Every structure is written in C-alpha cells, then in structure tokens.
Length: 122
Image 1 (cartoon, one colour):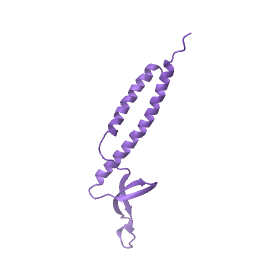
Image 2 (cartoon, one colour):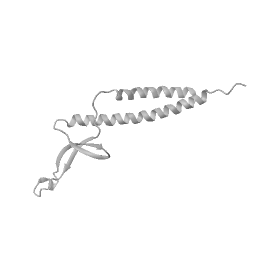
Image 3 (cartoon, helix red, strand yellow):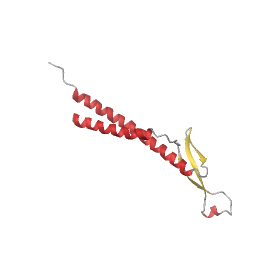
Image 4 (cartoon, one colour):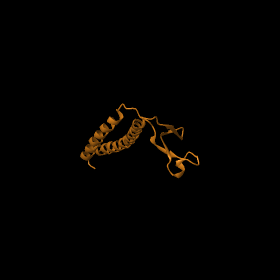
C-alpha cells in the first residue's frame, strides 16, 4: 500500500472512531447480562406444566464472580431492562472494535513511517 492509500485509510479509521465515540458518549444506563423468559416445571403431578405448558417468568442472567446469577425482572420493566442489556452488548462490541481499530492504525502509522524514512545523505 502506498503512502496515499495509507493516509486515506487512516482518515477512514478516524471516521469510524468518531462513530464509535457516539456509542460511548450515550448516557443511558447499561445492564450487564441477558433478559429472557425462563420456562420450567413446578413439580406438582396434576399441574398443566406436566403436559408441556411450562410456567414462565422473565429473568436477568448476569455474570458475577465467574458464575451466572439470575434475578427476576419486575413486571413492567422487561422492555426497559432488555433495551439496557442490548445497549450493554452494543457498547462492548464497539469497545472490541475500537481495540482492533487502534491496532490497525498503529500498523498503518508504522508502515507510513517506514515508507517516509529517507536513506542517510551521502
């Protein structure tokens, strides 16, 4: 890749970083974890869940000290908690992309430096 292409690619990288910074600068709260319905049997022999109509409740599953912890989602909060969990995953994906992008930028800058260095004068 020649110098012109390297500079052009660096400009594109900067535009992508600007997009990522919009994600990082949002103020909405985040929830680490996933919100989903938990379906289970209660154990009563005459309950309808024994025929396949399982009981359902919504839970937030989150990592805590290397284990999965679940807590019930309050009624009326399911949509909001799910949105906060989705925003958290979006934030983490953007962070991961930023790390990779910085590594790519450093490689390009190093390559640009190598191409710009002139041989010592005679």
